[in-house]
Length: 435
Image (cartoon, rainbow, N blue to C red; front, side, top):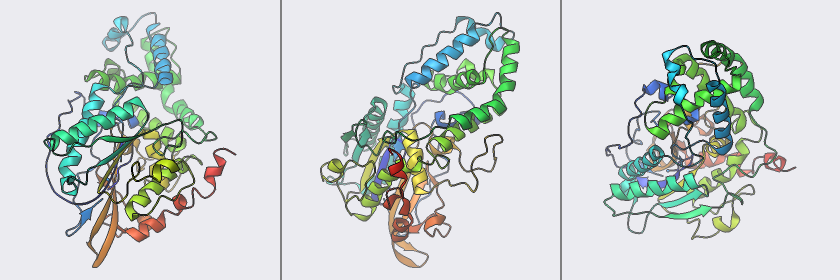
């Protein structure tokens, strides 16, 4: 099976059922609110995990856990908070905390809650896929060379070892330098566009009413649309950092957070997803590595793969039962799009959300989100053979593009054939990254 988003697991296995007790602490907020924070949402299963059909055996990727904001984002957030605190007065008890508030979030690093998320994930994956393992069949673990991604991987291996009573203690075998060819980071396409226009268009729709309301309650603050977005972002970031509800959450309604969630959906769709011409191509290298693992054939790719690493059995072994890769949410979005998952019949509207859309990043790449690819040897629809099933945060994905008959299964050969975009190195898009 193979996962995507920070952690990548790839397995070829037998299935066992088991339960596990999670230790990640509660954040103390309504779950529906936490699930409206787009890519800042804490991990939650998008569906209850279901075992493959009877007679099948299984094959498994994950994102970094909850962390502090990036340096540039943190600076923007801090400036917006200072703008709000510059108000002449505050009208309403929900604003009282601002008189003594000091911004204290760090930069980039994994927070304790994020470490616990990854540790829990390691326990879960051992419990779910223990039958894949033996003394000679240990998980092979890679991570992109970002401190929080590496820390996520190490916490995952610790949780995995703990759940097995240290019978199986996987190690982080490969850390891929992000300044070089790296299929676990979106750093090799300098010509890629941004989602700035699309997110600004949506902010112009939903943020003015919020800014007017807060500016009326905090005269002199003069918040802009971008200030509103920055301050809303503090709700999830402070909540996961402090493992307690942030007072900034009380400044906004659930409907306003639904608009915030759509802001994140647009950001990812037009940043690394289908709405960005050079978004999906940044996931092609990983998809080609996945195809190699599924078929047992050497990696065939001319995009962002590291040929030195991928040609060595030490740094890219083949025919193992379990692979785990750790990456970033943006790269996972590119991988999801390169695979053809969560495709929308129409581009996301920047002026009005489609409530029936499947593109909701809180269900795709929450903190510690997972994309899992299972390789199954089984009898399905009366045919015995090898099949592929993909799950995103435990929700089985419909793969119409390779003949999914309704149970999420595609024949392995049909799945490989369906990945023509990756097999053809992005059909010319990769050249546009640098031309």
